Image (cartoon, rainbow, N blue to C red; front, side, top):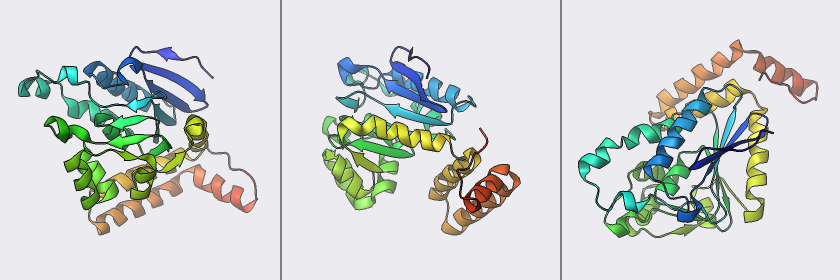
Length: 261
């Protein structure tokens, strides 16, 4: 596939048809999130969202760290107005509002903002040596990228409270057991496993994948009956497309479906 584009704090490549791989690229500081990287992520996700040739996005780091958290040098002397002026909500929302499936490939440290970044994905595949955590309380702060909400929804109130209030790190196996990670694999197999999964999704029925993602996310913010109503309407709308017909015929004819691209 295409060569890697050097975007400075990010690297972008197309390792398979329909798959975009975004790699955090500040290895000297364990891929700590500074404002430049946050802005680059927002711009890149917005661009890939609008690119019809991209059907799945993979977010990865390096062997030592997916992302070790916020770059504290940008926070130590920051004032409330300076932090407010960074518009972090807009930068995070470019990722969380992406309609395409996003897979986080987590190896090494995923701490603080790095753990929050992973939680913006739809699927988290972790290497067995990955280490997660929300240690903000240990430096007199609290999460500001969604962990009090996303972690609680993922693992439940009592586990989340313990992790958030103590700042204690936890392993990939613990993340899997509590429902934060989708899958754990050997570190050396992580990216090949993620790319195989991304390729599978990229060959799938795109409208159905989008509707499933929308229904899950919308349903998390709705009462059960309204969530079910949203699901039913999305299900019904899929009958307007040809992917449904192709998928059913392929199943009946015992062949591989060829969905629209």
